[in-house]
Structure formats: structure tokens, C-alpha cells
Length: 232
Image 1 (cartoon, rainbow, N blue to C red):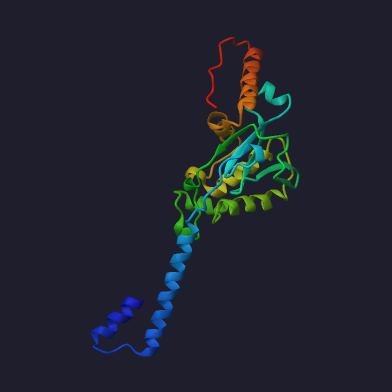
Image 2: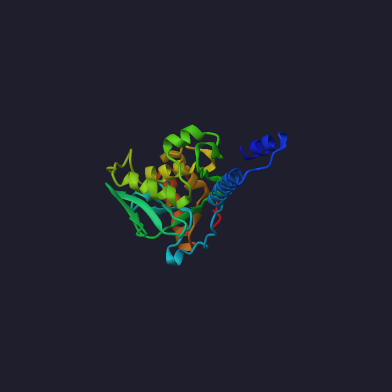
């Protein structure tokens, strides 16, 4: 609009009135401010490192084994997702989301996610994922913590169900709001597979427990072959 006004004035050979000039200055300032705001939304604040001793896992999915259950089925456990400051959030019961008090003990396994693979659109036209309309239906966010906060509010009114609405459902809901890796189809199954195949053990003790659990599972199924050594 500003360029069009300048073109019209120059084409008729006139000069710009102070009133028009002021209007164009205000409009240009508004455009610059809007651009700066959008640019600021895309900037990601630096994260601190993972610190298991302080139970800090910035932007991580975390996992803990369930007593007895995880011995029989190693892929089953309790999961949570962490804020940018490393505090753990987990859906631990009906209408209740834990904050920095991970249920079922300390974190045994974690997977740090890349925020660059998330979609934080300030508006519908600014989506970086290919499923913008579906993402808008699922719920969008302007930052990592904003997505987790929205999911917390949503699950604070949810009843816990072991099969349909559990800790995995909460984390999957967060990933869908983030559109992690461009997907809004995260669920209990692909989330469990993600942690199982890409998660890292916190320390040697947790690693040995994981190997023991896998061996016990193979023994229960009558399989005698050795389990490959996992990378810590």
C-alpha cells in the first residue's frame, strides 16, 4: 500500500503531504513490528544440558519401568515429557498432571527431541508442517512450553484409563500440538516404538536393568539367543 501511494504521487508529479507521510511512517513501523514479532517467535532459546542427578531433561521424552509389568513386557512403562527447563510432566491419574515429580521413580530412559523439527505457527499461513489444517484442529502452539501447557490444561479434565487415556496419550497429545517431525498422528503405539528404539539409558544401572528385563522376556518366551549389547 505504501509503494502504491508513492507511485501515485510520483506519477502525478506532486509532493507528499505531511499527513500522508505520517500515515505511511506509521504503517511502515507496524509492518516492521509485525515482522520482528514473527522473527522473535521463530527464535529458540538455548537449552541446558541433560542432568540426571538433578532430574533435568530439557525437551525430552522420559521413561520409567513399571514394577513387574516391565519385566514381563519391556516395551511397557510410564512416560512423561519435559519442559524447556527440564522439569518432567506426566499424566499420573484422573484430572492430574504431575509437575517435576515423576511417578514410579527416577527416569531410566530418555530421548531428547529437536525443536527445529516442530511447527510453531503464529498464524495459519505460517505453518512449516504439511498438514496445517489438521494441525490447527489438533491445537497449535507458539513455543515448546506453550504446547505442553495447553496439553496440561486439556488433560486436567480427563479421566485416566489404562487403555485409552494414559500417560502415553498425554505425551502423544503434546507431540501432535508440536507437530513433531511434521506429524499430527502420534499415538500410544508409535510413541512407545520411538522410545524403545531411540531412547538412551540414563546410566549403567538403568542400562543393566534394561538388559536384564529383555533377557527375562526372551527366557519367558523360550528364546535362548543372546541379546545384542545396546549403546549407552
